Image 1 (tube, one colour):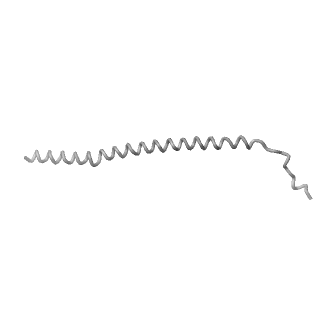
Image 2 (cartoon, rainbow, N blue to C red; image 1 turned 90 degrees about the vertical axis):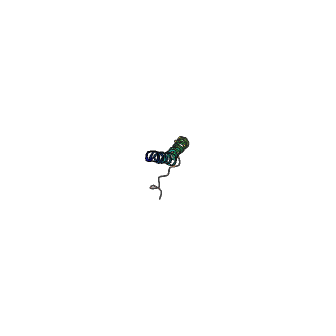
Image 3 (cartoon, one colour; image 1 turned 90 degrees about the horizontal axis):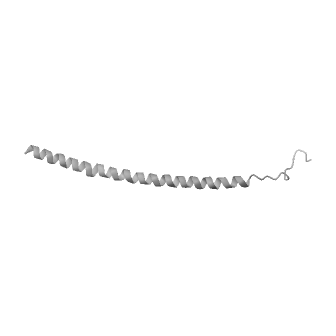
Length: 76
């Protein structure tokens, strides 16, 4: 009689641990992994976009006009 009650209590505790702790933990871990994957993809996309926008202005600034220079020390 006590053996059956003990087994039922053990099965109930095992059931509660699995369905109240293990399964929600697994689902949360899976959800967070998906969010981190999305976040990393967005960050890489932003880095690529930033690298493309910063590379273009450096090409334009390579031409410098030397005719506009005025030596202010000689002007009196």
